[in-house]
Length: 364
Ligand code: MN
Image (cartoon, protein in one colour):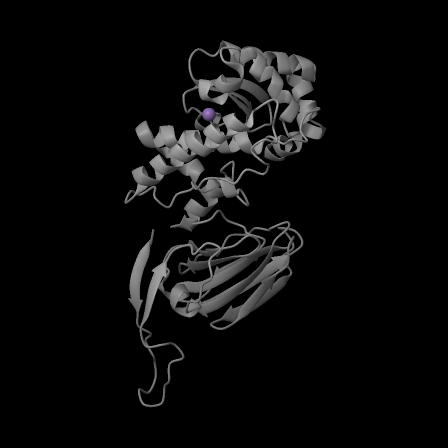
C-alpha cells in the first residue's frame, strides 16, 4: 500500500560541530494514509519528504492530517471550509497567509515561515502563498475529516479536479473497503429479508471488494478513490468498482425508519420533472421492471440539478455520463430472488418503505 518509501536523512546547515539536529539521524518515511490506527511518526521528516501537492497521512473519524508541498510561486488555493477548522504548520519555506470573510476582502495578511502554526477557523476564506525561493512544505490537520482516506493529489490541478467530483468530503464509502451497514441485517424486513442481506451484502458485495482489491494491486489506481476508479477504468476493474459504488449507494440509502416522501429542493425538483411524487415512483418502478437482464435503475441529477431516471446495465452508474447518482434500485436477481423470485416489480414497489429520503436528499 505504501506510496513512497525513502530514508530521510536530515541535512543540518551551519557549523558542523555546533549544530544538533532534533530529528533522529535516520528515519524510514513511508508516505501513506495510516487510517484510524495508532500511529507515531516524525511529522517533520514526513512533511519534508512529501513532494506531492497533498498526501493524506492519517484519517480518523473526526480528524485528518495531510502533508503538502506548494511549489515556488504557487499557493494552496483560495478556499473556505464551511464546517471544518484547520491547523497548519510550516516545516520549510516562506509564506504569506491571507484570510477574510469573503473572497474579495482578505483583510488578514501575515507572513509565516518554518515552525510557524496557522489556524484557520471554519467559514473563513483563506490562502497560503509560497513567497520563498524553495518549495513550501507544511502539514495540515483538519477537523472533521476533509479529504477521502488515502487521498493523494500530485498537483494543485489534480486537487481542484477532485473538488469537482460528486463524492468528496466525508464519504467513507469512497474507499474500496467493505462498508458497514447502518442497520441490522434483519432491520429492512419485510422489504428485504435477513437472508437476502446476508447474501447480497455479505457475499456479493464482499466478493466485489475482494476482487477489486486483487485487481488493483500494483496498478496506478491502487490508491485512487472509488469514483476515480469507476470513471477511469474498464473491463474487470470497472465491473467490480462499479458494483462496489452502486451497492454502497444502494445499501446506505435504506433505513428501517425510511419511507414517506422527500422534502425541500429534491421534492421540488421531482415535482418539476414528473408532476407528482407518485408519478415519479410509477416511472421509476416501470424503468426498473422493464430493464432487460441485470442492472440498476437510477434517479440522477445533472449539473443544474435537473433530474432524470436512467437505466444502467450490469455495473453501470450515471457518473460515467456526468450525472450525479441520488437513488438506485438494484434489479440484479441476487437483490430479490430469495424473497420475490420472478416478481421483480413487486420487489421494487416494496423498497419505497425503506428509502431514507434524508440520505438521498444529502446527495442532491
Ligand atoms: Mn446487487
